[in-house]
Length: 467
Figure 1 (cartoon, rainbow, N blue to C red):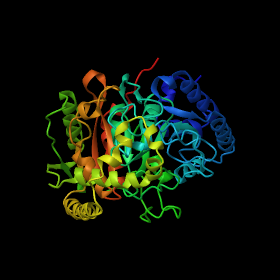
Figure 2: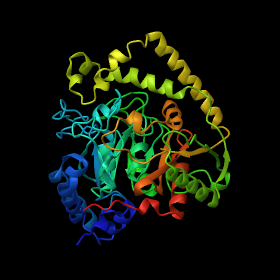
Figure 3: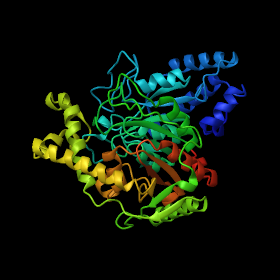
C-alpha cells in the first residue's frame, strides 16, 4: 500500500524505487490521482486532471521498466503542468474564464521533453489569469479563485504558478512546472515550502507556452529539493529550433559541475527589515546564511547596484504584456478577467509613450552592464526571498506584501537564474525561504549550493499535513 509519506518522497527517492521495481508506476499514479480527487477542490491545485492519459503513460512506463528499458530518473514520475503550456487536445485556459476550453494541436516543448523522459502527466495546474502579466491586486485573480496554501488554506500559495505550488506542497505530484515573468516560481516556492528554480532566460524553451512578456518569461521546476530541480532541469533545458529565444549555451548540470565551493565568492545582501517584516522570517534567513557559511561558502556583505530596476522591469513587462494580450484588450474579452487592474491596464499605462519605452530599453541594457560588472566580483548573491510568510487569500496584495523586491527586479531585467530554498518555519508555523541568485547560466553552481545547504538542513523535507 502506498502511504502519504511515499507521495512526499523526492523525485530521486521515487525514481530509485521505480527502477528497482519496489514501486509500480501505475500504483504510484493511482495513489496521486486518488489524493487529487479527495483534496484538490480545497486547494485549487489542478484545473484539469488527465487521469486516462496519466494511467496510459504509467502503464507504458511500467512495461518499459520491467523490460529494463529505463529512460532515466524521471521515468514513471508523476508531475503537473502549469495551464499555460500547450498540451495537444487538452484544454489550456491560461487561468481565464473565456479561454477555459482553448485547445492546441501540439505540445509545448517542455511537455514533450518530459514525455520523452518518461514522466507521467497528471494534469494542468491552476494559475493566475494571464500569469499576472497585466497586473493584479488580489489572490483570487483566477478562473478558480485564489490558490490555497496546503499549510493553511486561508493563506495564499503565491502567484502566478499557484496551482503548481499547491500540487507539490499538497502531495498531489512529485514535481510541477511553473513559469516566471517576475516572481512566479520563487514566490509560490517560498510560500509553500518548496525548492524552485528560475532558469536563465533562454535556458529552457518556451515554445508552446503562453507569451506574457516575451523578453522576461522563463519556465522552470517547483519541487521538493535542489536535487529534484536538477533532474527536471536536465530533462527540459536546451536549444530548441522552435524558440528563437532559446540559447545554444549548453548547461552542464551534473552534481558537482558548478564552480568549486572554495572558489565561490558570495555576496551577502542584507535587507531593510522594515515595513512588512516578520521577525521569524529574518531569524530563519540569518540561520540559512549561517548554515552556508558553516559549510564553507565564502561570503561578504555587499549592496545591489543603485538603479531603478523595479521601475524598468515593471514598466517593460506592462508594455510587453499589453502587446501580447492586445487582441483580448481590443475585443473586450479582457473585461471578463477577475481582477479589474488587469483589464484597466491600457488606461493606466496610456501615459507610457514609444519614446519612454525606448528609454526604458536603454536603461535595461545599462543595468545589464552594471550587473555584469557586479558579477565579475561575485559568483552568487544570497538574499531574502520574502520578508513575510504567505498572506491571506482575501487581502489586497499591495497591503499584505508592502515591500520591494530588489533581487527580483534585477534578476528578471538581466535574465538571471535563482533558486528558492526553504528556510524553516516562521510565523504561524508557515514556511519561510531565501534565495541564491547567480550570473547567467550558473545553474550548476546554484544547484550545488542548494544540495550543500539541504545536506545540512531538513527544512525541504517538512511538508503540510492535510486531512
